[in-house]
Picture (spheres, rainbow, N blue to C red):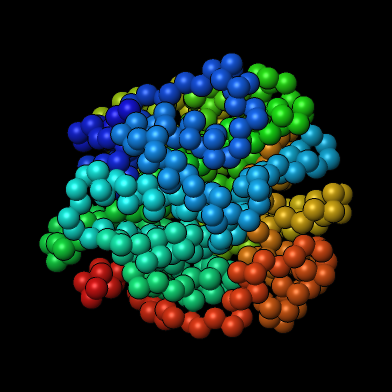
Amino acid sequence: MKYISTRGNHENCTASQAIEKGICSDRGLFVPKKFPHVSLEEIEKMKEMNYKEVALNILKRYLTDYSEEELKECIGVYDETFSHPEKTPVVKLKDGVYVLELWHGPTLAFKDMALQIMPRLFTQARKKNNAEKESLILVATSGDTGKAALEGFKDLKGVRVVVFYPAHGVSDVQRLQMLTSEGENVEVVGVVGNFDDCQTAVKNIFLDEELNLSLDKFKLSSANSINLGRLLPQIIYYFKAYLQLLRDNEITLGETIDFSVPTGNFGDILAGYYAKQMGLPVGKLICASNKNNVLYDFLKTGIYNKQRDFFKTMSPSMDILVSSNLERLIYHILEDGKVLNRLYNEFEETGILELDTASLKKIQETIAADYSTEDECLETIYDTFDKNNYMIDPHTAVAMNGGLKNKSRKTVVLSTANIYKFSSSILKAFDLEKNNEFENIEALEKLSKEDVPLNIKKLKSLKILHTKVVEKDKLGDVLRSL
Ligand SMILES: N[C@@H](CCOP(=O)(O)O)C(=O)O
């Protein structure tokens, strides 16, 4: 399997080269030249497989320059650091809705599903490509990716990680998780700005020749979902969810189901699109946004306009106006790097991207759009608990609301974060908010009867290790000082 750039001006790469590089030198993103196919007969045979077996089955189709032994060694992480035996259990709620819990990893967000295995894939990639320089992994986060990357890459030889987060744009627990991160090779830096400022600055660093010269002892890479090593492992849980429903006789082989995905940087939903392209019987993918509804507007009109107000919401991980992986989706629809290059050059100049009607229609055949206001988000948290005695976090609530509003068949709602990352927002839905986050956590435990994970309890006594905060045009200086 070879990987090419969405912008059409980059040599073919192997999977390991693409993972080590993170982003293409022509500013594009790596995409597979074609999608591997999984037949219904194969899906039937996979029914009884555990998570690791499904992971191997899917990943070996993409990571063709990794041996089966190497892949197994990487996949082993799912037994080592995930707290649930199923890894991604599916919980049945009322009215034909299922919740896919993706937060049983060490940092309690779906990002662990990829960021636990990716460091192993990355280390193998460095070996395969005889990497001499240390890798410097830059991460922009709106809350969850940061901690997951810090945890995954902690003390990994040959790798340094710098995480940039919006200093005033993440939840209290997300901030504490990052600022207390240990590891000789990690650094966390607050940015006076929003997630888009962090992400744009990071992308610009890759292209800054002067800065790259002064960082000559490093090879830059990324742990955001622009890196293939993030995207591909996320395909696994779409298959696993389908297989679990099949195994539990909730669906029959070949029956199409929908997935509702809380969406920010478009990586998670794109993994669902890849699963569908591979042959998984997916009907619609519901792209569920919060009040930052730039994707909703795009999916309805074909016009992506980032020139708009940026809202801080109770689902901060989705507070994003430039959704990086949309570029990959548009590439797969257009199948023409030159046209995509033109569209994205215009977008970078004007902040507006306009897609032709035929291409938009093609996207709409697979992807439906929805968004939730803050009030709808609170109502959904309340109603879901009231009806099912099941508590969800605000990101999952956005997907739940989108899933319910657009429901035409059995629907799996992706649950992307543990409730205790967002206790205060959840308690707002019940009018039970307390004075500080640790009191909120206690109150939420009483209400939900869900145990507080140890990694959350521990936060109270951990030392703050990272205090740096910089202006959004000063990220380069942080790196020069490394
Ligand atoms: N929602 C993310 C933002 C970055 O997205 P990614 O999937 O590209 O890493 C976060 O929580 O940081």
